Length: 307
Image (cartoon, rainbow, N blue to C red):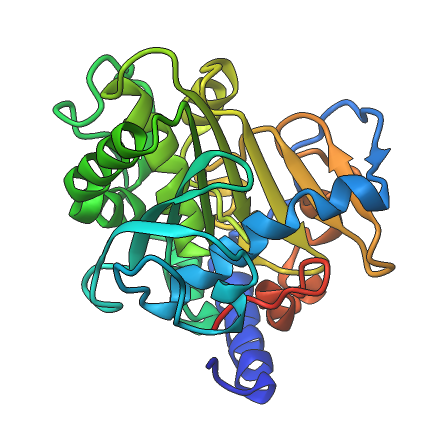
C-alpha cells in the first residue's frame, strides 16, 4: 500500500538535510518526569478492536450491514455501517457505524501515506489558524490548529455529524468513540472537539488515535486536556516520527494521553503533554537521527494499518 522502505529512508535523509539547514531541530521541552505505567497484556488487548477500526478507515467502506472490505474490517464482526464518504483524495475516506459488542457508535477517518504527510509536518511555513467559529462555537480564540488538518476536518464535518446523529437515534446509543491513524488521527481529534458542541447531552465520548501528529498549539492541547468529553488516548509506535511533528520549536504541542510502544513491544502510558522521558515519543524520538518512518504503520499489537 505504501512506498517501499528504501524510499522512506531516502526521504528521512532528505528531511535531515532540511532540518539541519533550517535550524528547526530543537531539544524537547523539559518537563518534570512523571511516573510511567506499563500496560498489562489485558489492558493492551482492549485497544485492539479500535485499532482494527482505525485500519479499516483506509478501506473505502460501503454502507452495508456487514463489512466486505478486507480482513482488518472483518476483524470486528457484527459492525453496522450507518454512513461513509470521502474519495480518498480531496476528502479522506470516513465511516460511521454501530458496534453491538461494545454498544458504541464508531467514527473513523482514513490516514495517509507517511511520505505524503511528513512534508506538511516539517514545513517551516506551517500556518496555525483558529477553528471555524460556526462549527466550533465557544472555543477560545487563543486555540490555534494546523491549517491543513482544520481544512481536512471541515470537508466532512457536517456529513459526519449527521451520520452520528442517525446512528445514535437508530441504535439508542449513548457512546461515541472516534478513531484514526496519521492524518485520520488528527481529523478524529478535531472531530472529538467538534461533535460534543452539537450533539445532545448524555453522550459519553472517547478518542483513540494512532501515529497522531501534533495538531495545535499549547492552548489547543490545554483545551483538549481540560474538556472532559474528549477522553483522548494517542498511541505512538517505537521511532515513528509523526507524533513528534510539527516540531515543538514551531509552537505545536501534543495533548496528554500518550501511550508509547517500546522496541520491546511493551506499552507505556506517559502522563502529561510531550513527556520528555525516553520511554515516551518526545524523549525517544527527539531528532531526525532517531526516526524510523517504517514504524508509522505499526504494528500496533499485531495490527498493521491499511487494507
